[in-house]
Image (cartoon, rainbow, N blue to C red; front, side, top):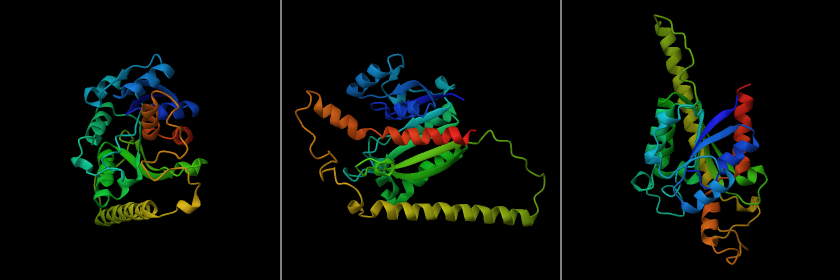
Length: 264
């Protein structure tokens, strides 16, 4: 099927570009407040409307959307900032899950900095996963670096992929024996153990200093690539900021292709 995509925190369109390369579907609306990014979006997607504030989005108005994607603001979790988490004014996950709950898409695809794994001892990422599960999603979190798809820079990011299974028909017996209840409890505990092991492994990967294994092309300051000319364009600051906040489209393409395979 051809999906319809609600692209939150769109930036310069990394998600939509990657999904187009995967032939996943079409974007029906962008949500982006940055004026420079809006210009880029209008240039490449002339007929797609743009909403400038997620607080103005009513998910029920976009009930036809089967995918919601978004790299919700990373500043509350980034090691380059103060890492205030939920206390940061730019913390917009609550708005994100509100739109998801109103729209009820088949898929949710989110992206954020890998610092979200260990901030507040992992409780924020756990809460994000719990919120999605309450809305009927099966959730998988993955730490994927840009170097993993052949880029010359590391750029570790956490990808949050949720599949809505709330409409799946589940047959339950009228009575449950104590043995079946014990089995269910054991399965729940095993699932919890698997989730806890993911967080432990993700924290370990996030804290490792493996710079020797990849080509050093980023400076120590704010991740701006070494050798980037500051005389490139009158809008160079806007361009560098937009690129820095963008996702790697090839990873979105990989995720999109995986979704298509899963739906066969």
